Length: 397
Image (tube, rainbow, N blue to C red; front, side, top):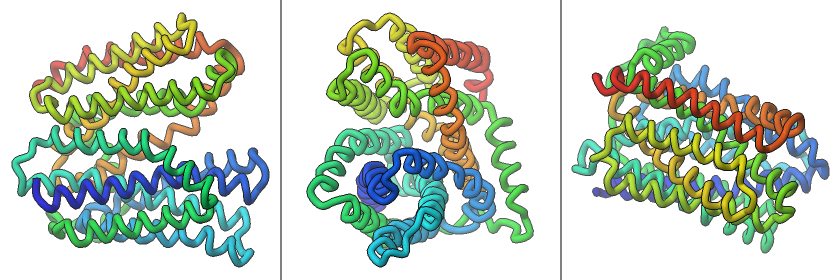
C-alpha cells in the first residue's frame, strides 16, 4: 500500500466516525428542537427524498471532474451545512422549514460523496499491487468497525456535551476528511471530457442502460437492492419490535444488533484475506441462500440467543456482499461512466427505503412477526432462483 491508499482509508475512517455522530446527534437534536417524535420521524423520512435529486443532477457532473475534486468539495459543503444547524439555532433563526432544507441538502451532497469515494478506488489501485478484493475488504471492515464503535462513542459525546457539540464535531470530521483527501490523493484527470450539452437525463439513461444490460453489474445490483430493502427495516424496525414485544428488553436489542455487527466485521475481514480466490457468482448465491435460510429459521426462534446466532450469520452474509458488489462494479464499469454508475447504484439502494419502512410497518401491524420473516425468506428465495438462472451468463463475461 502507498500513501494514497493510507490517505483514502484514513479519510474514510474519519468520515465513518462523522456518520456515526450524525446518526445519533440529528435525531436527538430534532427531538430537543421540535419536542415531538412525529415531527422527528417525518423529517428523518423526508431526508431520503433528495436521493432522487442528487441522482438526477449528479450524473450530469460526477464524471466530468476528478473524483478527488468531487469528494473534497462535497465534504466541505457537507461541513458548512452541518455547521449551519447549531449556528442558526444559537441565534434563534432555525425553524423546522430551514432545518428540513439543510438536512435534505446534506443528504443529497453525501450521496454524491459516497459515489465519488466508491468510484475512486480503481484510480488508487493503479499504482499499487493490491488486489481489488483486498482493498474493498479493508473498506468493508472499516464500515463494520465504525458501526460497532461509532454509535457508543457518539452516545457518550451526546451524554457528556450535548447534541449541539456532537453536530459541531460531525462538521469537523467533514473538514478533516476533505483535508486528508486533498493532501494524500493525486488529482487523476477524467478519462474523457463529457459533452457539455449532454442532459442529466441522457447521463441517467446511460448509467441505467449499462447496469441492466451488462450481465455482471446486473447480477450484483438487483440482489443488492433487494437485500438493502430487507436489512434496513430489519435493523431499524423489525428487531426493535421483536425486542419490545417478545423479549421486552432494550438490552437484548443491543445484543442482537451487536451479533449482526460482529458477523459483518468478520466476513469483511475474510473477504480481505481470500476474496480474490473466490468465485464471485457462487459467493453471492451462498450469501443469498444463507440469508433466506436464516429468516426462515427466525420464524421458529423462541429466545434471544437463537436470534443472535441467526443475526450473526445474517451479518456474515451482508458483510461479504458489500465489498463483493463494489469489487465487481469497479472491475467492470468503464472509467468514463464509473461515477454515474456508482451514483445510480447507491441511489437505487436507498431510494426504496421509505417504501420498505412503510411496507414492513404495515406487515407487522396487520400480521405476525413470523409471517414478516416468512415474507423476507420468500423474497430472497425468488432472488436466489434468479441468481442461479443467470449465473452462467455472468461467468461468461
